[in-house]
Length: 323
Picture 1 (tube, rainbow, N blue to C red):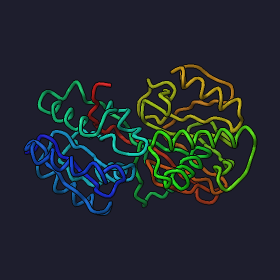
Picture 2 (cartoon, rainbow, N blue to C red; picture 1 turned 180 degrees about the horizontal axis):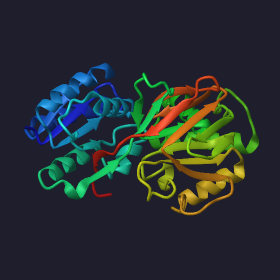
Picture 3 (tube, rainbow, N blue to C red; picture 1 turned 180 degrees about the vertical axis):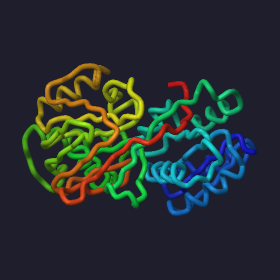
Picture 4 (cartoon, one colour; picture 1 turned 60 degrees about the vertical axis):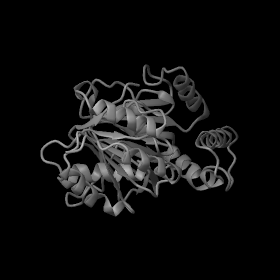
């Protein structure tokens, strides 16, 4: 039996420089069972092997795609007897939203050492549950993809712009995100269209199966089961369980500035703002004119003929460090 199992993807961007240190740390710590995959398709086999050592905590060390693939396989694969071990995520991706939500906001190795220390004691004070977002085309026979953070409309175009235009410049993440934000604001304020600027968001319709609908062009569209949003905002009221939280911001500069100002003051989600919409639901349908959505790094297309359906899952245990 291992205290902590660590699943690493050596090909994730953050691991290109970090992995030698991770390997050295694990070699000096017999409490850690370290398993590396060469590609995402090997994660199922990795979890089979990890399940055999019965870890108290499962730690994921990789980018958004690795986290999403691992969560999907944990939920569907049935590799663990009964309830799977609580999952922790190292802050080793481009955005680290899941890691930040779970209190891991330092260097990855420091977070790993803290997780190992926590695992040596009683975990009960550190266990939290989160529902996952199950994304599918609505077909009962299809296997949903699972994640915790979905960005759509203008936010999806912004993420794709940053990924395809800014990240290749090789700049630090903070500078890349700042340049992306400036490009988005410039395009929104002045209405400029150019290849070097983010694409304009396409109209999208969001339907809540149990009632209500939002329709239009949005600069930001977020569906999440996390407690924290971008810029530290809260995703609306968090008292309901089994519900996904949605934030949509009208594609108008005043609404965008109200959202940003509320985020910087730590007030986002605490009260209603003109042009800023908060909703909750357990089943959400998204369709539009070939509108992209991104679930934990993976891109999906929603259109009028093939809408995307989001459903919240049963709770999954996670390990939360002290924030």
